[in-house]
Image (cartoon, rainbow, N blue to C red; front, side, top):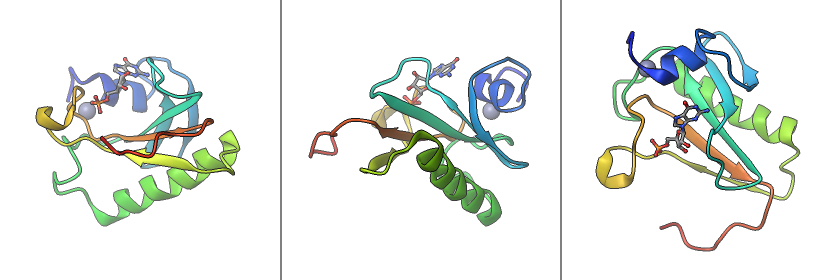
Length: 111
Ligand code: 5GP
Ligand code: ZN
């Protein structure tokens, strides 16, 4: 997707603060962090959301990236992973991403 910001960020077409990457995914700092640690795990290929026929290998690579982000950021006390699907859920960037939030005690509620 030539006009997709997360395609460009995940594939180094626009410089960003990459925390971890492999062949399939990149993890970079959110531009508007909601917690002391707020990293986005993003596939390098374009999928709109979590139910956009994402290959199991890519979902596995995303899960591994979460583990690496937690290790690199020292999130030993815990962290939260969120993905929004659709505008009603608050999705604003239509390229699949998982938010990894931590570095403080998070609220008990999910919404
Ligand atoms: P959503 O609301 O779609 O679940 O999350 C989109 C996230 O992307 C937001 O947390 C927002 O701060 C982040 N974001 C939007 N544009 C950019 C950008 O250009 N660079 C980075 N690093 N994050 C962005
Ligand atoms: Zn994209």
